[in-house]
Amino acid sequence: MTDNTQNTADTAAVDTANREGAEARPLRVAVVGAGPAGVYTSDILLRQLAQRGEALGLGTDATIDLYEKLPVPFGLVRYGVAPDHPSIKFIQGALARTLDNPKIRLFCDVEVGKDVSLDELRERYDAVVFATGAVDDRPLRIPGHDLKHVYGAAHFVEWYDGYPTGPRTWPLTDETVAVIGGGNVAMDVARELVRNADDLLGTDIPQNVYDGIKANACRELHLFVRRDVAHAKFSVQELRELEKLPGVQLVVNEDDFDLSDATLEVAADDKLTRQMVEELFVIRDMAEDMKYDGGTDFNGQPATKKYVLHFNSNPVEVLGDADGAVRGIRVERTETSPEGSMTGTGETYDVPVQAVYHAIGYRPAAVNGVAYDEKGTRLLNESGRIEAEPETDGAPLVTVPYVYATGWAKRGPVGLIGSTKSDALETVNNILDDWAASGKNGRVAPKAGDEAETIAYLQGKGLQPIGREGWDRVVAYEHAQGEKVGREHIKLVEPDQIRRVARGEETA
Image 1: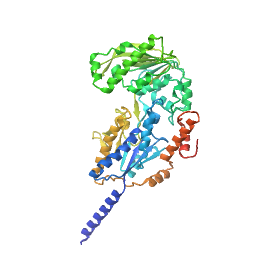
Image 2: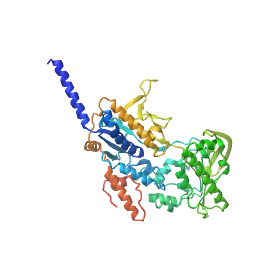
Image 3: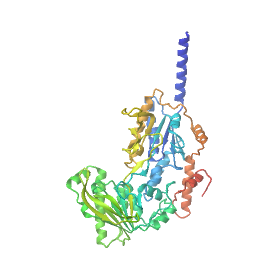
């Protein structure tokens, strides 16, 4: 055998050994963000690999590491939904059951882009998926947006949901309040602003939030929706919760419900829109009864608060006094076409208020090392594949190999929690297709390691990741604290205490 032949044979033998060694290990995936999008993606990836993996030459074995910057998982479900939503605990329970899968491992209290770089993850994982969600408000861009007592909804939600780095007090000192927005977050914010604190004792509301709402001075709330009744974005569930607020009189402008036949026909074409419109007409009838009964709530009891809904009403200016505090809000009446196009009429009216909350959309978080699409308010991606700006001006965008996005990080801040499942399926199928085309059976990470190696690597960086056992300790502690006062559980809010409980350093 010649030297060249021998070298070729040796190289082939090494390549075969390397390929067989790679195939012997599980595919390794890092999912960044342990909220619904991240958990759903992890579950769907394992299911799709089981169905498609053999046909694609990938095998069916994979492990997924879920990285979460907070000391506890579940993101939006734990920290982005109002505490009086009864469905929260069922969704959280379903997510927890997904984490029972031993192939999904939890690494909380680790922030990708700060504690660990994207490049480091790419060396250790065959795919990296960003499911980082959204925590910031879209800015309110009207005159007066910077006056005292103008608040973004995201920060108020952080307060009443006990976000670990959120505020612990909130200035609920204003009697008349405006909320801007036509979606579920606006509805949540408005509802919590007129809630009786004692009605929340059956939830996981933190003690500081209960105390704050107990002292809330709000007696009149105005909700402003830019478009008409048929083009709001409320869920039926949100509307039904609005219908059962103790001590609250609902007030509407009956002219807002004079919808054209064309508008009603378009609304009828979509089941969810039709249901929403029907429920809003129920609210109109309730408001009429409450008015004629002398100002009552849904139970016929005297109301102590008013909740006023304004449709076709676009706030154009927050009015201030000489001290820079809110004194009112100026609103332009609008017209909405059957297809949802909105135009201003030039007719304005003023409503005296002392505080303004805007819930006009979230801005998904940026990630250090990942390009951001400012127009779409999302990570820069195409069908979930992360892209980067080219080095040459005018050249097409460049796909970053084996790096992906899902959920709000992928599509922007639209859609309900359940919408993340279809998002995840598209991203997962793209991952499998890219692995199959890699020529390496998907095993592309040069430093892929097992759980022990990953933990050693993180600890070597001075990190103390919190895993599933730590999360279970937090859940047990919260339930134990609730039992002491006759409640199901009370949410922990201080990040250092959460860490101590998770690590077994503090017990109930």
